[in-house]
Amino acid sequence: MMRSAETLEDLYVTIWVHGAREARQEARRDFFLDLLCTVKNLQRLTGRDDGERSIHEIGVEVHAADAFRQHIEDGRDRTWALGPSMRVLHMQVVGVPRPDVLWRCDSTPLKPWMVDVLDNSRRYEVQRWVYEQLGRMTGLEELVLGMVDVCFEGLGDYMPEDDDDDMTTVEFLTQLEDAMEDDDWLHRFINYQCLEFSLESGLELLGGLKELRMLDVKSTAHRIGVAELEWMHVNWPKLKEIKDLVSERTWAGDAEDGLVVMDAVEEWMEAHPHGIGSSFYAGASSA
Image (cartoon, rainbow, N blue to C red):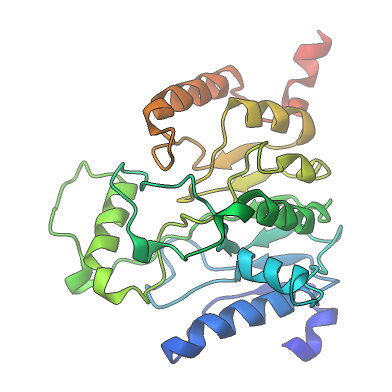
């Protein structure tokens, strides 16, 4: 694959299963980062759909703090080759320092084994570096950074004991993670150390993505609020939807204000029923 990387235009990663635990993490991070630094003609990078991935499989994944360290401190050029030709990108950005994430989205405390130990002082520095890589993809139409649901068939002993029909997907996943606590090598279902997509973290670096139509932040600890939606309305005029947008912000230290954030986001969305970007309201504005 690496020998052909410079000529690749369309890559669909269906299954990526690693062997020994010690080698798995290092190989995954280095391989996909090397790939992103090489595929200069790539137009589409996609992965498996919801319900198709098993608990032992992963998709395209890059550890942001590791990549940043290699680029800044180790002197290795880790600049992504992806540019204006990109149309669709499905991947995971993990390993973002997020000292603000203290709880899971069901308001239960985040456990140490669920996150990597990172240099929290680089929270925004690492994110801005990743935004710079994404920002060169000015032709991007679909950006999927959210988690893909696994197929729950055959989970057996990992199934939560509660069989509540009213349980939300997030509640189910967090209970499932608790059941898997002794097997922390299993791929996580929620990304706690992700890009937050807040203005404070450097969202403005993605202002050139004028063709973006869909953003997916499913099961990630994003911090998209009304200020971010207003920015997207202006800077991403063709943005139709953000998958898994609504969040109570119970991930973070401002959890007590989480419901206020959620209500404000829902109110903003109700006021923009046709889409998020300004192009959906051009006629109304001119009228």
